[in-house]
Image (tube, rainbow over all chains, first blue to last red):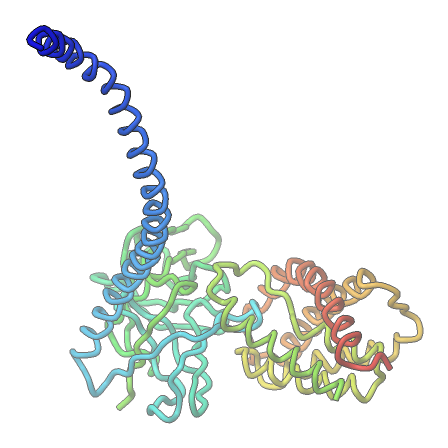
Length: 240
Length: 163
């Protein structure tokens, strides 16, 4: 009996490391099995997380859009708050069906007190004037329409000219004498003398000045401050 | 029934072009989505349906444009008259010949508008701008009219009688 116990103990001593050694792959198998099961779960979870990520990414895009809109609206609101009784905020809902004319359609009309020849602006500068007013919407002729003319001053200088639309992105500043002060980078503001636009509205910046052409006037190109293709909200200035 | 469907589709497409498509930063070309409906009704349904379609679509286009009052109605009516008189000499046998005619009509419309603007001095200025857009507009009107022709034909097959 004593011998049996001894042998058993010795076997047990051998068995211990053997179990440990044999147990290693078992642990590995167990580990692999658990990992596989976990992987299976992880795969499921991954699909769910991907879906969530897509949703969050979409929401994030919306947020950045909303942030941009918020920024724009804040600027509009800030401008409107300076003179609440004088301004009407409006949204751009469409544009001219023909590309021969530069016109936008806004969502405010007669019902909101809009009348023809009311100036339209954004925080950046001048947009144009209301030319046709309906009950619920109005058509606005943009300053780069070929029929548009605005009386302007060169900011800080004593030169005055007429800013005409060309139907393209840039505008033409006309009737500036060759010896008048006008240089690239000069800003233009409305003079208020045409009876439509109030004085001091920023309109654009001079990008080219050509004095080497025949005649007494310089050939001047102006880039408007607004990108008229990307207008979302505008302000209508009520006339007194 | 048939004309009202064409007119409503033409007006709907014009409104979509003015509102939804305005947010694409494309200025260089703008297809005239009302033109194919006017040409189609004039050539395939006769002068009276053509005249009605022409009046309604051109009126709506004028509502959505800053063009001088009556100018688009005038140019479209002139095109309708031309189409009525040339109907026997021009044969539309496929959507491609239809698209050529629509593209050609857009070119003629531009020149008619130009002539009208020059004759009625004071209404518009620097109007030579119109020439710049004539060819791109005509190409895209012709291109789009292929699809509009197919749309009208499928509407005829599914919902309207082919008469």
